[in-house]
Structures are given as C-alpha cells and as structure tokens.
Image (tube, rainbow, N blue to C red; front, top):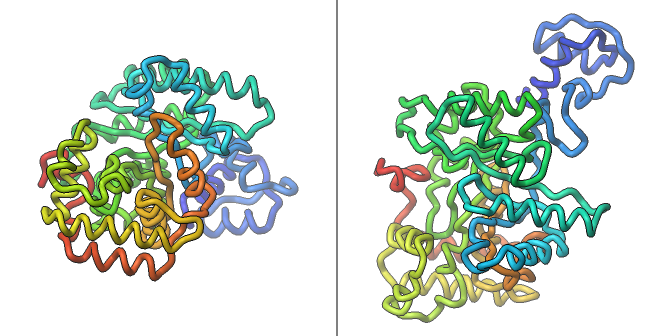
Length: 391
C-alpha cells in the first residue's frame, strides 16, 4: 500500500460516510476503519484537498516533464531582466511549462514572476506554468520557513508554491545530525496549510533522504547532480528512490558543457583554459574523479558523437549525454527529469527534442557508452559526499 493510497484512506476515516465497496475494503482491511455511507466517493475527493492540477496538502503524485528549465544562470548572461524574460517566453512558446529556481538564486524568482505575468496575459488559455523553488537553510524554526515561503510566493506572484525542495547545509553522513528534520516539519506544516503543493529534497544522499521519508515528510523528488561523469546516484540513491517511488530531478547532465561538441578534439590545456566559471570547475572535478586520462575522456566524447550521428535527426554530444541520463533514471530509478540550465534560447531546438522524447537511445547505444565508462573509475560514495567533506 503506497503512501498516496494510505493518505487517501486515512483521510477517508474523517468523512461521515463511504458507500464505495472498494474504498470500504481498503479502509477496513488496511486501516481498520469503520464503514459509513456516501455514494460514488472518488479517492482523490476523499483525500480532501487535492486540486485537479495535482496540488494541495492531500496530493502525492508529482508529474514531471522530461525537461525542466533551470533558471539559476539567467542573469549571468543578461544584464537586464527583459532579455531574461524573453528567453523564458521563447521556451514557454515551445511547450516548456516547468521551471526550477531557488530562494538563493538572486533575482531568479522575481524574474520568473515577471515572466509568469507576461505569459498569462498573452496566453490565458495555455497550460499552467509550474515553478519549483527551494528552501536553502540551516534554520529549523517556523519564522524562517514562513518568511522564505512568503518571499517566494510574493516573488513568483502565486498563491501556492508548486514544489519546494529542501537543501539543508548541516547534515551527517550517518544521519546522526537530525536537525534538518525540524526544517522538514515546517515545510510539511506549510504544505498542510495549502501554501506548498509538493515537497522534495535537494542534494540529499540516501541516508538523509530516508530519514526524511521515515520522519513522515512527503518527499516526491530529490534534486541531485547526475551525469556520465558523476554517477554517484547509482551507488545507493537510485535504488532507494525506485523502492519509494521518488523521482530524481538532475542537474549537471552535460557537466557545464564539458559533455558537448565544443570539447571534442581539444587538448587538455585548451580545455582547462575554458574553465571560466565556478560551476564548470566543479564539473571538471567530476571528470577527474572518473578519469585523469585525457585520452579516455576524448574517447567518451567521440563515442557520444558517433552514437548521435546514427540517429535521425542527428543528435549532438550534449543531447546524447542527456538522453543517456533519462534512460538511466527510468531503468535504475523511479524516473525523473533533466534540469537544463539556460542563459538564452541558443539550444532551444535541441532541448525541445528531449522534451518531446525524440532524442532517445537504443540498447546498443547504451552498451557502447557503458563500454567506455567501464574504463574509468566506478562511482564511489553517495551524492555530495565530496562536497560536504565526507569522502
């Protein structure tokens, strides 16, 4: 009996009557409830407060597109908000409806709020936009949670946040530091108050993600780094998420551009000269953990290019790397989505192929890529172990 059904049945106990035999059986057999009588009770209706768009305190069935637009880079390239909003409008016009941001991403939330207002005004009958934000903290109190929630609601211009992802700075590798669970309880309270639709983790390893679930937090997703160069989720996390039905939303899938056509054929020195951002230097460290053999990395890039050229239309190196990650999420985990950071609309057509499922890999493709990956180091440690100083 999964958590969604449990929540529906548990709340059914509070309804004055239930006439549906199937629901009566669920309630009686699994929860020891007493039957009463109301005709044609729908499970979602019984849950009490799950809106048709999948939001609300009774909801736990997060639907994800294959591609989420990541918005932390928006202001890096655009000095003015207008150009950033134009980029978002271009993505929305091509069918992208879900956007990832955070309370700590500078003006990202408020830019998304401007974009939402413009889009709704011009396309009132379009599919609703969704914004996934974060609560990045080491504060466990209600005041901080309420303040950040109100700030995000105001910035985005919405009545409820579609999803909030908890990133807590202070964790222990063995789960012994449980302060973050108090922050999770604050988010659960806000969800029950109707101010948050769905809850997720962010950079949560398997041990601490399990602690959140065991503590009663309704976790539906976990945002983590995952790519051909950083396969740490395969060590423990994907298996646990498959067991629990928790989706992964993954960033860094093209490693800041290292997994792209622009790095094919470069010397190591030329590549290092292009490490011009903090994020790209971070992904370089992921490459070094997989291999320090530059020739092997070039073999990987050449393999991705060769795989892409077998497809119609031909796929770029970055598209093949992205399609590989999506297939891994489906086969090893409970599915999920790519978070593709955008600064402009330069890769919009490529991203649309991924969104529409037109850039998928065959078993032969996957096996060819796996043969190269096996020549490097296998992933060790859980996600963020190095970043938190645990490795």
